[in-house]
Length: 102
Image (tube, rainbow, N blue to C red; front, top):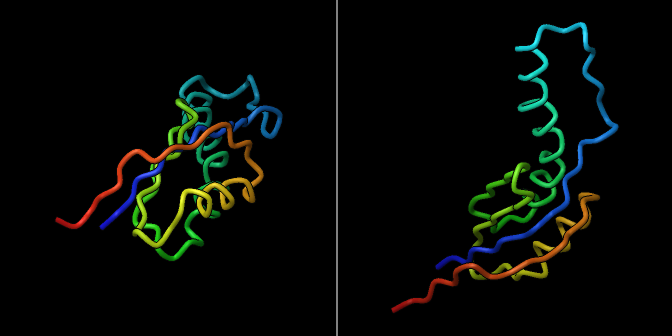
């Protein structure tokens, strides 16, 4: 059995890294889309990964969402606290799906 939670998390990359204008456009685009986003999301991923019962984590920096699938033993509050400890601003959270034994 598993639970799916969704979180709206403000993950700002602003001001942490400046891309030099002298770089070729394709390099600048790569850095913007991959390196900066991964850096923003990595703190959340590391914090949630510390919960042993987490099955999967999906992070969308573009949508500012974090979707976490856990075993039944993990509460919404447990994951919420982990995200807050990552230093990101948790805007909202909800249970998306709760599987039950038939």
